[in-house]
Image 1 (spheres, rainbow, N blue to C red):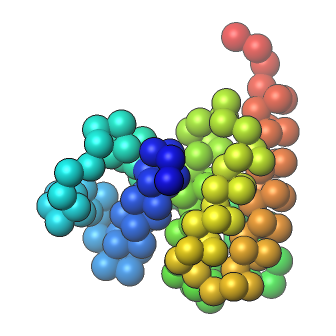
Image 2 (tube, one colour; image 1 turned 30 degrees about the vertical axis):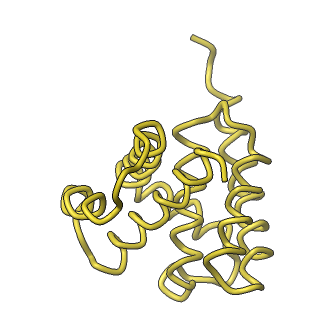
Length: 144
């Protein structure tokens, strides 16, 4: 498994802990890494980056997901799926140079590992739609 995939999985787990444990980002950071053993610094760094963007932009991310997840409220989604979506949308926002297809494919693979079989299709549809909106917003911004 590549280092980026491992980082994405760790970011998902951090988001899951924050979500279900109703913990603040600082509390998650304090406790999450204690039981992980040796994690390569670049793996931990990218996981922390995704988690930070997801936490810093949580309201925007949740609104994007909600507006593209037709007939699904956030609180009715499976917790793993909800947090896979949050991590991927955070990557769209925080790392716009990463190709949308790569972020979506990684999210689908993580869903296949951690979620129900039907989740991959749901995540694919939501992320494709959100990704297009985020890309359109980025391309509409004036050049600096």
